[in-house]
Length: 536
Image 1: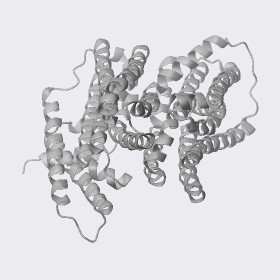
Image 2: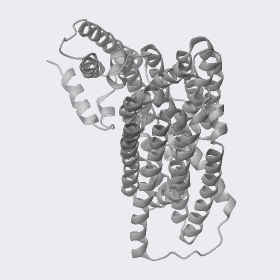
Image 3: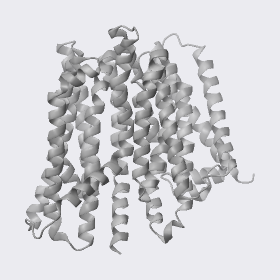
Image 4: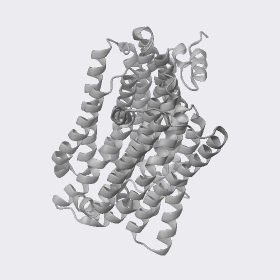
């Protein structure tokens, strides 16, 4: 009974935090657009070189460790060992504290060395500015873990949104103020790093106030009885890695690019200024893919808690339909998001980032949406079934492949080679993940008619949007600037593409009405599908 309750509460917590995670991801992707408009491609390169360092550490600690701690605390409470809670909390705080200090020392004092490895020693000031956020992680992780274990998901969700809102506000406002007084893009980048510090500090203060109010009412807990330290540390480590590895994948690939793309461009004869701008333009793909993943993965991951619950019931016999639906949603909307983005990318590129530079490279980059959507879905379902070690190794292999392929492709093809290496690495990981999944559960995800339906809907959408954009682009409106025209074409094309894709998808009944009902806003889709297919 206790194990069943623990799994349900654990997955319920993950589900309740989904909305906050979506908002955070959207903010994380969207703020990069005005930031790039402020600092330009060179400034964007500077920021994106350092961003993965900070994001990886904060994701692992404040997200992964929080989930791990909440799981451990929930298990102890379910087994009636509440006396151990204060000791476990203390162990977690000290353990994360030691890790944070090590990372802080590494980033702060090793900033010059890391900068030289990336080919730009001036990045050291950004690394030092961002390193301070690591010192806040022990408090943030323990507080989040405690609240999640208590079932106070609303508090954690508010904290996550508050952190990101403060971070984005400080980044944009601070960068604007710095650039008003100075044209130093490295100072602007440092201010952006301080935005992360401000955001996490806001989260700590908010959670600390709530925690103080709660403990003020309930009184101080007694720390009674011995608790083995190393088993707790081992659990925290393994659970935190498994909980955050899929979120870390995209960041780790960015980290590989930070160490390789700029340096390889220079090594192959490109000037520093041009290499900075090329890397900055290439990095435009990051927020585009992030947005595509949010659109594609939100629907599929919304039912993953249900999949996990079913896997732990009746030996997983009732999980198969939900696994199939999860895959179909990820595949369908991953394809749609990637192809839709490719169809409008030159105009979207100009709308968001002022120019159409490297649009072909960004089209190739956008294909990563398909692989990432499927990998995130496979990883989530495997985690729900307790399969973590092999998928984690597969994702680490993906990062190694990216590093190797960057070294092979960038010297010959430039930044488009980096985009292709990302696709190849993710495709390898996706195929290996699928093979491992099939080894665990003999499931046929979809009949051939499903793939034909998705292909038909995607092809019709792609052809119509391409035809529409080319047609309207040949009739420019004289009173509008080129960028305003790009805005009009982009937004109208996205709306047209969405309408066409949904129409063909529902007309062909690629996803059944009863399956739509399991998804957010699925009731409306089911009604639309029934209406379109009713006999006239």
